[in-house]
Amino acid sequence: MKYSIITVKDIYAIGMKMSVNFQTMHIEMAKLARAFMPRRHEIINRIGTHAFSIQDYKQQHFKTITPESLFDKWVAVEVTDLNTVPKGMESLTLKGGDYLVIDYKGTVADFPKIWQFVLKEWLPNSEYVIDDRPHFEKLPETYNPQNQINEETVWIPVKKVS
Image (cartoon, rainbow, N blue to C red; front, side, top):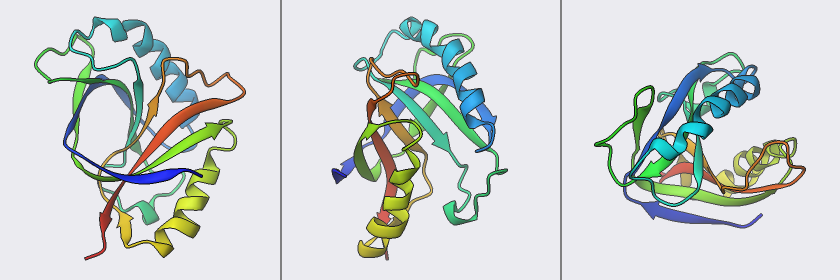
């Protein structure tokens, strides 16, 4: 699995969100994407053509999250600033810092293998822990969950162990 540590400044996003848990996430995410994606072109200060799938665990410690834990799920795009937010959408600042960035190519069903890699292999052998900031995936314009194989980059917020 190809990965790197990337340090970024704040990233601004505009999109739509809903409260979900791991049991309802896939159904609700499809509804959210169907509501947002046709409207994404209303955002005038967009950067690039990618979209974000964002998970904001609201500073719950990642190890204590259960399948029933609620968190905010976003579908959004990156923007230059948060000055113009279309009606029915919201803004979010993804705080800058270090991210473990993983290039993923595979099926939706195989996606949990990323977490197995991070939690069982990468974290225990690194000088990092997961940070309490939103996690996100950067999805290319061609991304479609119905595709057999998709490519995306997974951004996991990390910080050095102090």
